[in-house]
Image (cartoon, rainbow, N blue to C red; front, side):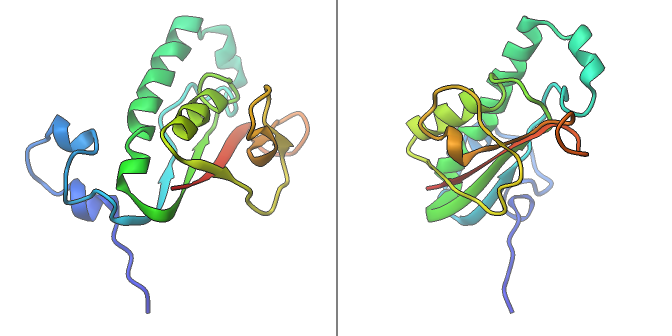
Length: 151
């Protein structure tokens, strides 16, 4: 029988919020996790494409900064050899490949994941062939992005 400890169990117990803990400086969570899934708030352009008409570049930039503020904690809380999935329900470069690029700069490695059913990532990133994009005009699914990373 395996045991699963959630981030909630270690971190979000009822107590006052601490920005220090939220930025990955809480020794109680550093290097504790084998797996992390991060599906941060996003522009949702993959599931609600009509939002494209109302979203502007500034909103995407703000969302991207917020997503990175969450994502940058991943290498701090993962155990060495631990794996993370970063996914969004949007198709913007700023919220996907650019976040993953920053994570690789923090020492995470983008790894292949199966099954590979979507399209490769966009751009000339060294990991573009290992991330997946799902386009609603190509598959009967909402648009989304998936990257798997290893610490």
